Image (cartoon, rainbow, N blue to C red; front, top):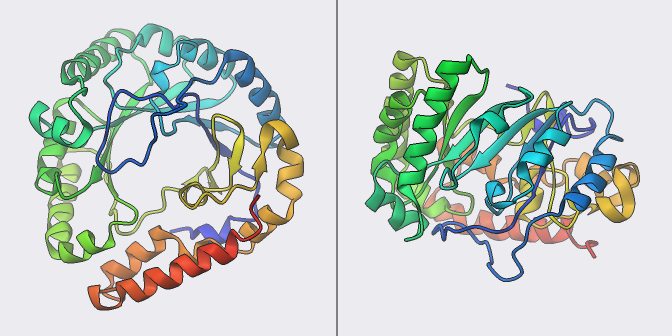
Length: 326
């Protein structure tokens, strides 16, 4: 397994872009704020694309963010403009998808559905009363029909954020994935929920082990969520740009609001060479990253007795790293 520290000095080969901060949902684990929600305009996107072209070796663009990308009315035009890149998209699945248009150029190869439960009542308890479960099922059925008819390379991945409301759904998620022919299942452990994870560690271990056995039987990819780095893609760290151009060197940097610049105002080349990015390249954020803490929790090095102490030190470290942020 490649450790992120081995890759932090390399220029990114993959970038995540946020094209909307609008969302119809109200997930219990999400810190999204509804005020000032908007879509990235097509003109803003073209400016962003011009900067992306300056990143040597960039191969993949992940379209995701705090909002629902399919709410942006320009989303299909945006995808058409990105036809020279491999594309993955994250969606709740609650907005109906035009699969022929999505797959027009064959560059969208991964559609990642965020699904936290397998029945309407449970998923609304987690994601809010506006969750359109009928639209989700319609999208999944339409995808299967489209793929069969067109021999498309478009694949689907199911992502579940494990939380106290769906800990008993872990096995059901894998059965749901089998039914709708998902290529892979990713169980995400919610960042900042260490007490819940530690208190339910044995239960989670057992549930994940059972799920992975089923995945192997069904031919579905599923990694160990205690031993994974969601920041890696194409042997590089995935950087992120927010809807207003704020640039973050990794997903944990976004979580900690460690902004290294604004791609609209400064451009990638200037951001890459600045002092804030240099701190990141030295591994300052890796030292306190939640993903590494999951390794320690699974190994028993972080318990309820010392979790608060380590969390306090983590907060201090994060403040030191981000002290020079504007």
